[in-house]
Length: 478
Ligand SMILES: [Zn+2]
Image 1: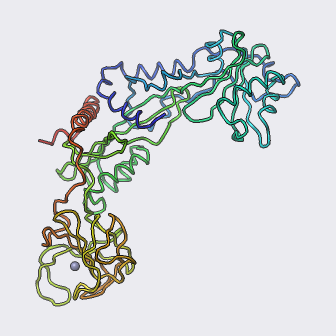
Image 2 (image 1 turned 30 degrees about the vertical axis):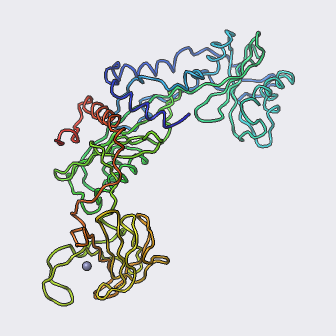
Image 3 (image 1 turned 180 degrees about the vertical axis):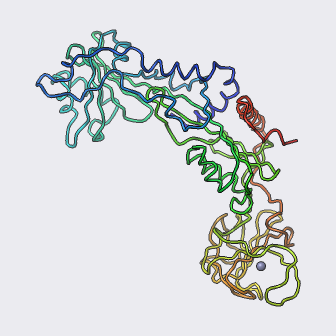
């Protein structure tokens, strides 16, 4: 199953979702399905012919309440509008093996038992333990070997067996997450194997709130899955310095996807982020996930500009800004002078990274700057790094560097009062304020994909607004 297909399916389906039936009603429907048709069992079914107790599982298995398995935020459940074609091709799993056997062969299942593959146990051994005769066992193994490598089964793998009056009539096992494998007995076809897809319910969850501590605390309180939170910080991190620029009262909002195994209520996967928004004292940033035709995932604002900035505002981790850009009394000369960069205080030896991809123009000693590197980036932009204790190995004029590549280490060389990085951004060879300069963005969306992208933006916005949530991205633009 291609994940790419699923997520593009989800996002295209989003628009018509709110026209579907009410959320609560559908949740009840799912639960009702799970508890339907429970056959009664007798104590005799708990014992094998030789008197040993079977590893018995009631039919169907107890399932967690669907409502309990969500993150806990306001969760809306919507009916899937389309199904991925893989389910049409393979058919859909049932909640129990008994249901599948009855559906496929019309024969009645009187009980189910499950067996776990023990260390050193062969397939024929476990089938014999499950009550298969040698001849039947051989048939089943032949069928099973069409699906999996029967010599390389995982220890602990569970086989469920369905019986009709103590005669095995069906076997179920899972080899991969998305498939259920069945081998069932049918008078016309003897034993035959097939696989089905587990039905998956997809949910879009909207979370928003105000930031009082860190962004991680604020978003974490909403039970957003870690992968979605991580992506949120990564996408917005190109535009925002979360340590310095985010203040108490700023707001965030995001939309992410949850996938649930409809039969067990289990959460699948980590939660794909589809939309990331941030309001910083009036300034609104919002980015939308987009899967390009070649399968790559990129993030763009509403107009299709990339979320990726070609330069970082802070090319050093965990440092404290010790001096801003602008007029100041110079710490050594005592005269007022223009400070044409930003200083970050950090312990000697702290790695400094290239704030963008580019070519090294200078790398060496430069008077008051001490050990100094100048990198030219695409077009009009250059960045400079001064007072290094050491320049990283291989960084010489002409070297091409990647964004985030370590180029040197914090020091106090040249005219400096203590270990710090003096960082400059130059536009057309003139220093500008690194914290406020409008930075060039990454590659824009290909023009021919703009219409598809705008449709996704519309769908995401519609999805949020239709929940009556406080959505700020669309309301403040234009
Ligand atoms: Zn400085």
